[in-house]
Length: 286
Ligand SMILES: C=C(O[C@@H]1C=C(C(=O)O)C=C[C@H]1O)C(=O)O
Image (cartoon, rainbow, N blue to C red; front, side, top):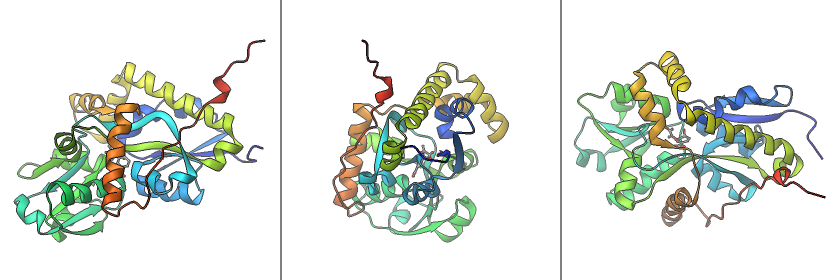
């Protein structure tokens, strides 16, 4: 029983998902699929409310409603170490920050909770937190440090002379030995049941887009320089240091994050990740 309407796909409105979406958008027919671009925190809510059917989203927000969602396999926004766009930025000594106030971007779910985990379990500190729109200057007027993600973090890092900048992907790697998965692509269970072929088509388009993008980063790098500024060498390294897979290694890192989040009361339940299986790919030979 299919939907009598187009399938809505949520696209994170940051450069970090470009490899997964760049080509896919052109390949998915517009009469069947609608792309909705928003920041992660808005897409997280939209999936929960059913305003989007399939979306790139915060891995933390997936976990909050894991029973209602299914993960599209081997797609993510992860980092093996440095992520370059999830940054705690301050002008003050770290001791002041640990005992002070941190402004958190309103656009994130994974990274704000990663920071809480790092503060509690790594630094054994309990700073105060306030949530704000992502603007470094106003955040640092009201707090001792700011957590930014995505394009806002990238732009802030280009203007960060004289600031201390902590890359949370790098800190997580040095602390735990694991990589970190910040975003996943998930589908509502009801959509996967009603529209398995459409979901399989989206999975195929995103997987092929990732493959094409990573085989030749130049078109994405040119687009990033044009739309977001910066040097092509920056963007080449940015896309190369991100990791778009979600295999055993990435799952192990994310499972540790979920475990710490539960330990701190940031998640209620143990998470059992469920993956979409593309039955349309199974050929029956008679
Ligand atoms: C690598 C990133 O990963 C992301 C971080 C997210 C979060 O903190 O909730 C959500 C999606 C991604 O945008 C980034 O934002 O730069």
